[in-house]
Length: 420
Image (cartoon, rainbow, N blue to C red; front, side, top):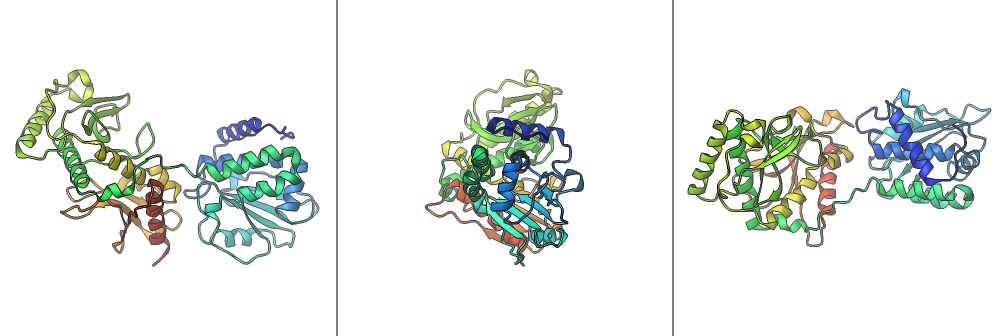
């Protein structure tokens, strides 16, 4: 690679191009798997292509001597090191591990140090956001742990020609993994009795609709053309199914198809009395009797009036908040991807998503759920380790934000996955 200029735009363009060209950017689950990780790695590679910047990094960050040859990304050999370079004329090497939104699994640093050439001049440089500093401390002089902001602070003066690149790289490394929870709702809403009862009633409408129309249970799925949590039945293909999503026209329960994306209103809310339930069942059976109703909106019978109690703003606030908790991308970024082929069905007692922990598969699977009993007193998330049924109920303090709630769920998962 020729020496780059100091344009931030060129650095970003280089990173995007390299990611697009490299088929092995995402080798192992939980390790160097996300686009933010790959972007940070490739942008750092771009800056270190300049000998002056490389010398500054070796001297003021790696704190070793000698001249480092070009840093390379070892994509063919797996996730051992993000970047690596030889020190000219010696056996020593400098390895770099970068993190943006993923944690470093326990034991990884000790393993990478053991694989590093045993030379006093060798270094393993670990660069993380401030909130993701590695817990592991192998007590090895060859290990250098630094945060993205400290990296920039140390090098913008020492390598002033590339100061704008170091600053932009550090800003990206610190911020890109922190996708904010953009729900301006207090988690305390999950304790409101009326909201709890209404939310559960609309879930019951989803259960009735999915079994009557499709003979299928609803469950969380990742097979969606858009991002975020998706609770659905039969909506993942080119025919209409049903989903539970944002409240519109008084209900979160809608007919939906994903290829192409389309939707149709059922006009059914929470069924709080026998008359409303009987009318809803009649409507659903009428729709199900149509031979082609799943093939498009034009085959659906006209919906005459709204049945049941409409969802109010509090139901949508609770749904939006809980969908951040159940968001598969957030959960995977925390180290817990969905167990795709074994998602639990929505039933009368519980709504849950099942997760795995690739960093230690021996831990089995985990559930993040609401409900769990015949009487729902709250919508607070419950986090369970399935092999021994150990459960944490995540609490909502008065000062908590949506971000706090999501963070507590991730912390509970990590605790159950890493502790007896």
